[in-house]
Amino acid sequence: MAVSEPKRLELPTPFRIGSVNAYLLEGSPLTLVDTGPRWPASLEALDAALAHHGHALEQIELVILTHQHCDHFGLADVIRRRSGARVAAIAPLAVYVEDYERTVAAEDDFAVDVMRRYGVESARIDAIYAISRSFWRHAEPVEVDVRLADGETIVAGGRALRVAVRPGHSPTDTLFVDESAAVGFTGDHLLPRVSSNPVVHRPLGGGGVERRDRTLALYLDSLGRTAELGLRTILPGHGPPHAAPNELIASRVGHHEERKEAIAGLIAKGRRTVSELADALWGDVHETQIYLAVSEVLGHTDLLIGEGRLREVDGKNGVSFAPTAGA
Ligand SMILES: [Zn+2]
Image 1: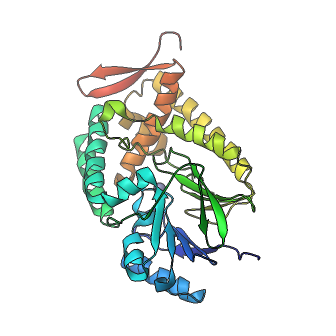
Image 2: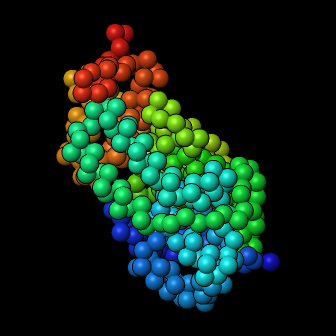
Image 3: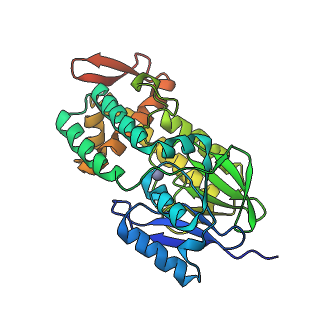
């Protein structure tokens, strides 16, 4: 039996990124991929979009989640309560969302520690901390009924979706791949309009700054593995579908290579702290974007350190960067 195309439901968010996509998969079980944030305008739009396609939220039978960011799973508990739908996610994401209040509090503390370590000014840290607290409210804990693992398949909307774990943008990034159609739901792992930020998250097993992941290195590795899937189309978490995912991956890899060299050049000219590098790259960074800017800079300095071209220097105002002797 032919399976209908996934329906993209574009839902508003209160965030700078703009709208977020949920996808409706018609077929058994009636499925949503991601949910939109816990925000009245988003829920209203979700109800209306489902009605437009001849369904009600109460009929949803399965919700699958692409990652831990609140614009993607914030309404999961509302949907689960109203419909009785099962919620499915990889096991570490299940742990994260079930214990959401505690995990996001720990996440904020971790981000503050990262910024302190790298000498970000305390006024900036205070600003982003306050903003972060207001953002997290756009999700709530949700119980996960089905715990998935990398490589498994799940039947959703009349098709089999392969679970492909691709950390980097967040530690729980999950692709759901319909191999028969070479179509992948990519969440924020690969976006057509913007380069995905390698957000420096608290490690899933917990631990402090010294245990942080090299998120951009992880991300680039994940992108390489996604290229091997040979997808024909991606259905991303933001923006329209994209029909040449491997070209998009090549352009993202090229972009990061250029940015890495730009950062190496700035450091050679004496811009040595994370804040100096961020301001040199993006002007005066908007306060909501500070942690994303810190994450982007650290992603690249991690790569340069890995290549032996840079070293961390401890100073009274935190860690900065200097070229190695041979670089
Ligand atoms: Zn995200």
